[in-house]
Image 1: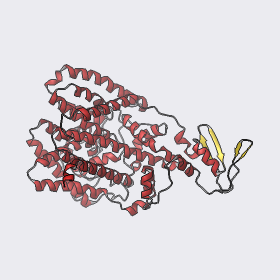
Image 2: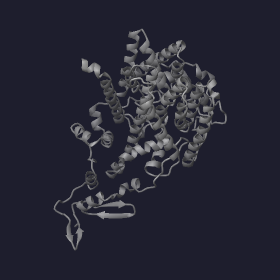
Image 3: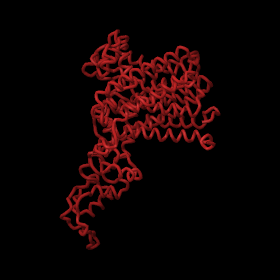
Image 4: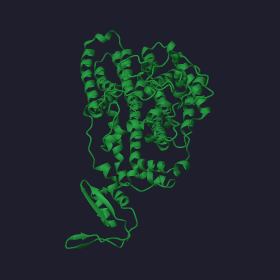
Length: 564
């Protein structure tokens, strides 16, 4: 017992790490991001950076997509085995890259909780519950920059809180790279960030330090916007209205509650109700984007489980009711800002559907209720979620607190765990995903349960997979006149190997191995390796590095003498 008490934080931290890795594996194995929502729109960014292909790109900032592409490149060697792995390495890049951003956001939330004197153990518990929060799980598995905003937004709030609490100018300068990255990533995130900053406006806005920071921030923001424009030839606000979206919502959309809320809680049933969509979508998958996606999720419950959807509606109602209850009584201005931040996200969506700024394109589909999606402000919902957990901790109604926490822990797991080991082992696509993900040590353990294809742990094993096939082990190379001769092996299937502009045809297994080890690749995979090399968006990269450095500085020196 003394050991447990003495090392309780270390044990809790270890549990948090293991728990989040398991959740990552759970979603990685079951969800294929390249089959998911809007990959057809944003996937060309990855093709552009990973494979060097030309494509028509969307009006998003390029930085997030470049980052995901760089993560995808770690698994390029799988294409030496088969070109059919192209989408699967992008799937790896999306999910693992997003997971890294998620961890960065969780780190920010931990220090945000410590700023409010939340005990370390409870802070770790909050992070574990947040890892199950459906809007964040959804943001973590699809190719959209909201997870990038989740990484940055907790640090934005923390530095703003610290600046106004301590009046230290350094926190204003810490905001520069974070603010420029947020505002240059996506139009909706730009608006949300602007309103978050406005929420903190007071008399200090006239301080000269703020003027200096603004003078530095604006040209960097414009540079990043132009940097993306030079690649995708579109500014953030150059949105192309899809068919059926050239509309403005009716005022009744704000307050209508559809009679089918409980009887038919599925996609498009709440097209005339903002409230209905948010209630179903916060703790569910109303838009069939994640675990209800017909193709993306293994053993999907498409169009959704009606019982789970109903439980989700009740949970969402309790979630928002409790938040409003605590906000109305909240005396801590910082907590009120954080807890009510989700309202900014809803407000920005209302600006969009009512076309408040007529110089921007209309973007509302009355037949769907789109784009009212909790995903678009998921990173703010996360802050409201942790606010609620802070308040529940201080609540004297222990039964209510424990019951609600139990629901938000168990209920999401009921939605996410739709596949068993048998379903995983029988799905070829899933096996290939595991093969791409695995390290050599993991592979040997998994091989007892799942038939994993090939072995890519070393260059020698990669070469063996390139040259896989029947061959005569007796037909070996021999030396003649100081040249190594590879006699034709009739049992071995000839194949073309390529290295830049060199093409060789090998008809001997040992010859194939030598060329493969020397950098030659199968001709079928040539497209993926000898293409146009895209340079990194330098402005984005510099701001990202500065952001990471400010975070490391804060972790090391900015804890105000509090214990971790």
